[in-house]
Amino acid sequence: MENQKILNGSLLARKIMKNLAVNIDFYTRKNKLRKPALCTILVGNNSASEIYINIKNKQATNIGITNINFNFNKEISEKELINLISKINRDPQIDGILVQLPLPRQIKTEKIFETIIPSKDVDGFHPNNVGLLSIGKPIFVPCTPKGCMVLLKSINVNLIGKNAVIVGRSNIVGKPMAQLLINSGATVTICNSKTKNLKDFTRNADILITATGIPHLIQADFVKPNSVILDVGISRLANGGITGDVDTYAVLPLIKAITPVPGGIGPMTLAMLMKNTWIAYKKYYLNLSS
Image (tube, rainbow, N blue to C red; front, side):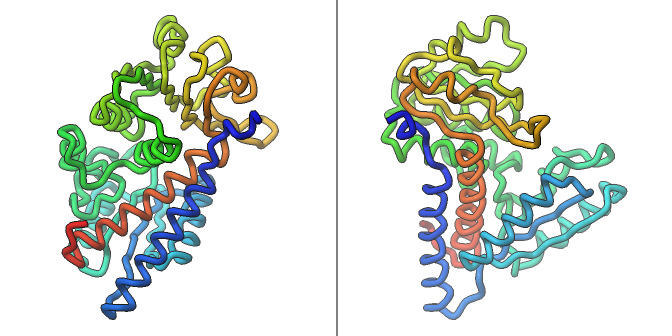
């Protein structure tokens, strides 16, 4: 019974990918067009990033998206990286650009986000796309928050009037997540790992989303009975395993549903990256509005 409370992000992501594969095959085969293309830029030799890129490449290939990869050592200058992105911006054969984070110190992440043209910003981090999200008219929504919303929809969560608490204020997860929830009619509170008396906020949450990277920050006394928890945090343990922000089995008897780590939000993030690439291809290459 309790296992039914664990939201299987991997299963839902596979369904989304299967649907994308069908649509991509239909449009490209029927119209004799090139496949959608996603360009990935990796700087340095971060092992976690390399694993993610390899998984991304495999999944993209499986659904009919072309992979274009650039790998650079950590000494690359900001100017060199900007020049490369500017060149990719002008390439009509590439639909989306993903710059894998983190970047080395000499490169300003915000400057790189601003360099990617909004029409290829499948991560949704360009200021134009951030602004469109804030007014409720997004084209590209950041992949992790978008995956969270799709998961909530999959279990028929009605967000109107619900108290949603986000623990984490990053530009990648916390802030866009707040915008999506606000746009959906929820009452939103944004906390962070330094919030005083954090549990006083989280215990009022009908929907709790946490993205701090602090293992087991959220314990049973932090949650509201019958709430829904999306655990976006991920940390590596001393034994080599990974865990989330939430002590899952401590809270499980109390709550309605929770995403596991791994197998929850991670697969959904990747699926949303592929979906955003497909949106870019349709909107700016096929000139389709939907």
